[in-house]
Image (cartoon, rainbow, N blue to C red; front, side, top):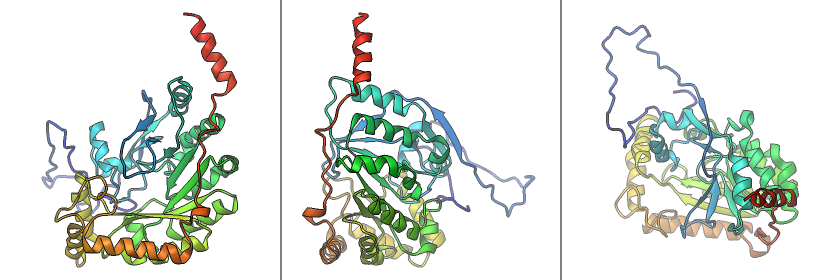
Length: 357
């Protein structure tokens, strides 16, 4: 389907009943035509906005996702299975039925103002992209940034959208006090491949341009080579790092392809559709890097993998970053948590409300 990553809508694993479409030949539409699903914004209110984790694999213990589901439609997205908790599919539903958390900024003020809250760097868009296309019309991410700026709260953003340039005014001011850093995700420099992998994300060259724009604005910016797909995108690793360093990036990271739950079947179907001659080789290398399975959720291994191929990736990444001067200690961003404060007007309002009791 044009502009979509998944070509199907597999059933929700929690569903009590399964539906199967059967064509009896009496349909009004041309059998050769495929109905193009439209994006639907499901505006909703949520009960909490900061999510906490205890994973040793990631450098933050809290995050905010203004949206659930992602219109970018990346076929490999590890967040796809989370749509099952909304009684929706990890396939087309994930990229066409997007939950918009309308009260995100209001909730964030409340949670940051709590006496029990202890400040630490917060990740924005760790599960689904905070700058996906719907952000242009809803602006939830912009509202969240305004709250974080007011509270002087440190944050790190991961995105593959050039829309982040819209918020340079806020990020630039925060970066001056070491309160903001950005990572732009680039998985390949091949535009044809990127169009199939990330159908509604910014083109690779546009992402590199965003890195340059952010760096020129004084915002610490890095590149995340993710996911690295064996025999499909891994050959681009050094070229991506070089291009990002040339654009001014000072930090870099990478993640080996992850295929949790429904993502495994969706990705295999995508491979068979677009790269049938490579499919067996790609899947074989994935299994070699995951202890014989398609996915390994073990802490310490799920991001990097194991085995000879995974070890080779680590060596290539380390060598390339050393040559390019990436991840040098003097260039790394150091987010500050000691500047955090609850704005006086919010603190006073809270005290006034408590006095009523």
